[in-house]
Length: 513
Image (tube, rainbow, N blue to C red):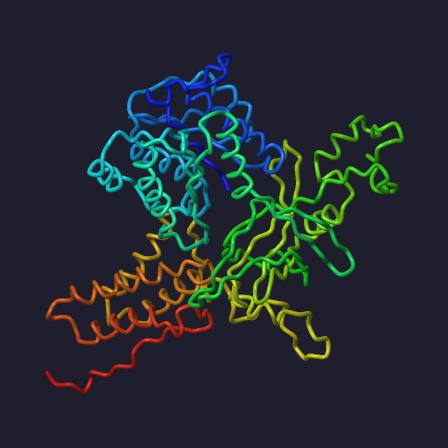
């Protein structure tokens, strides 16, 4: 998960730290810089693909280093930070929210490490004012950790702990339901010195930035792989059970990318094979770039260069990546009981020439891709069947249920489709069939993309149209609008892509006026 380091550079962070060693001359800011360097060192070993940004704040905030994987840029900036005035945490989180939403959007899980000295400078009334002004909970999933650079028995820390705990609690109450994310924590150092704060930061890294290793199996082939970023537990819609990815991922079949489409993914993870540093590894007959006995390959690249790039190391994952890329296929992976994902070939950038497998974690349950039918029932075509259907797509399972599809790459496209529904609603009863045709098209596209919230909003819009009908409107208008709004929200068929909304059967022709 991308990380924002939120560093306090107020005047109080420039206070010198008492030390028994006369040769040391540390301030709280220099100790915090040592902790940040420890964090970056840990990422270089365990999570070198992690994006990190540095945001400094006092009464204002500044994005000192935008999101980057070049941690040396952050290290180089730390000794040259300018001190500010007073601490204003609520302003800092406003800036962090803007940075994250601009860079990553609403669905990417984030982590924020708040490093401050515990001097909030206010009493209980002021603390309550800060809590009310905090722009929390955020609209994106986030885990906030607090590292106070202060002695554990300092009175200012005792006053600040309720505020820090409230920040962590508010972050955990995010309204985003795409990803389940665990709570953050407060990591107070045992002593106010460099070793004490570095130990606290190390404890944070070991608990929050653990590597996730598992086995990827396909028949008799198996490879040890790392999932990056580490997956988090997920919940099934309407069920309280929590799903956790198994430590063995089983490839149970293959499907063309065209048939698979783009099912909604809870999260996506790079599948990185374990580095093979054994000099006895058999590399014969692998490719023309096989290293020679002297340690260099025929094209001049060194053994170390090949090992640093997993795509150049002979491995089951390399074989699988090439097969999926050439055949335009995806692998269906069993993640656990009643939980599936898909593996596809991925390349970071053409000029980077780094390729890897990408695991897309689907929603728990067999209906994660409704147009395919139950995932636990997919299989090859039975050759004895007369007039077999094309595997695995069924004629009634499609993205839009017939007619033109819904292209929502831009906001105005989605708005145009919703407005088309409302235009038909305002021309009832003449446009009854057109209304339900557009509703079914919109509904099936929304379910296919996991955009069920759209149906609730459209139902509410139809109810508002019904309430605004004039007294001269035919009674069928109100009945059809109320029926359509209720049908969109019916829990029995809300996520059933096979269900088709039908107009309410009405007949007012025999009524006298």
